[in-house]
Image (tube, rainbow, N blue to C red; front, side, top):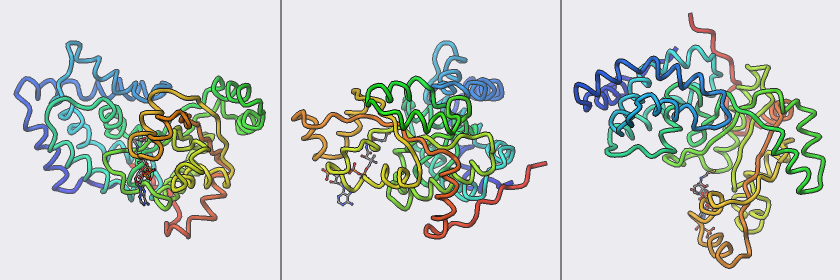
Length: 311
Ligand SMILES: CC(C)(COP(=O)(O)OP(=O)(O)OC[C@H]1O[C@@H](n2cnc3c(N)ncnc32)[C@H](O)[C@@H]1OP(=O)(O)O)[C@@H](O)C(=O)NCCC(=O)NCCS
């Protein structure tokens, strides 16, 4: 079992030390029941549900300081939670980086807690989502509902995605799912994403019940091949390795995100020449494992041995 470094522990304790007596007593009193409520909600289809359940517990609303205190309190117990999950070494190797990032971030924040960061940090501190590279997390429990696959088959008049979904038992098995952490984009590049896929394969290898790995984003949109060719690897590499895609349609969030960082995409969106779509990318476990074994050496990772179960 890994341990928090002394400086990481000090930073989490400093976040707790900022709380008033009443707030500190509240965090102390509820951190176990709040963790249980969040963990129970982890099977919900909504990624933000664990965080929402925790916010609900306070009844009258929870301040940013108390939210940070709760995350810091959970982070002190993270090594025990991680040990219980028996994660592969490729995941464990990433923890020191992620813990440093969260410790530094928490200890320098004031005011309200951004809702997306809250959803992510609750999951991370409770080991519901684990590191996949230095930018992506991986939810250990996710779902791929049949509705969106059937809708894709109808809209695109194409049965191949539906067939692939049925073949891998995608409707009744649990999936992994990745999310992007915008606070540290260190690994948002092709080598970083290759590392993510290998990490996901290692988790699949140690959890036979999983159907594979999911991602969902505007950045898997096929027109990016010509509009933003530097992002084409995101879709091209998994598809070449056996992943399939389902169109999730357009929407204001996808448009806003696609336009956020690129003046090229923004101009095409404003002129109406490009309407970003979000795509679900599903990489069935069998194909993912084959790809990972063929590519592991290229990205310089050791085989993902499963860590012995903690006593
Ligand atoms: C997803 C994201 C991290 C990808 O960033 P990225 O790898 O830098 O790629 P982008 O295509 O977005 O790059 C944006 C701009 O950065 C510059 N840029 C990126 N990579 C570059 C490179 N290798 N060389 C030169 N310029 C580069 C370009 O100016 C580009 O603008 P352009 O398209 O007009 O040329 C970024 O778009 C983002 O943060 N988006 C908003 C949040 C988001 O969508 N998160 C994911 C939620 S699912």
